[in-house]
Image 1 (spheres, rainbow, N blue to C red):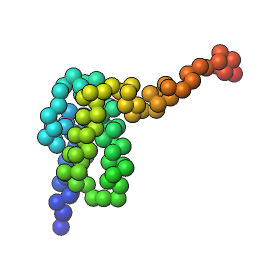
Image 2: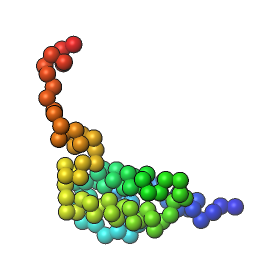
Image 3: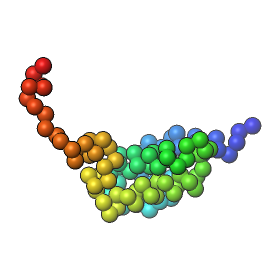
Image 4: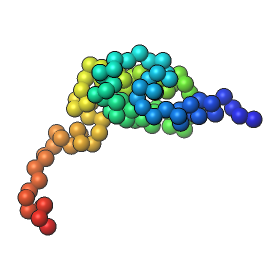
Length: 104
């Protein structure tokens, strides 16, 4: 016998873009915000889920909450300010690479 979560998990497996996730969860969004930040939004969503939903069965309302929060993070901010990916986290530190290290 299939449980109700099977359909939800199957639905999630079919989603591939930030727009599809936002549409599926019924979250209104500004296209320009998503066009510029789609990977950052999905990564932040993943990070929120990993921290808050670990070990729990997928739940539509919880997932919707975390996706809405991930999207909202980028409505009034930038990818550089949010530092979702390591490249932005490392940008604050030294980015000097000596020429000698490239010739070895």
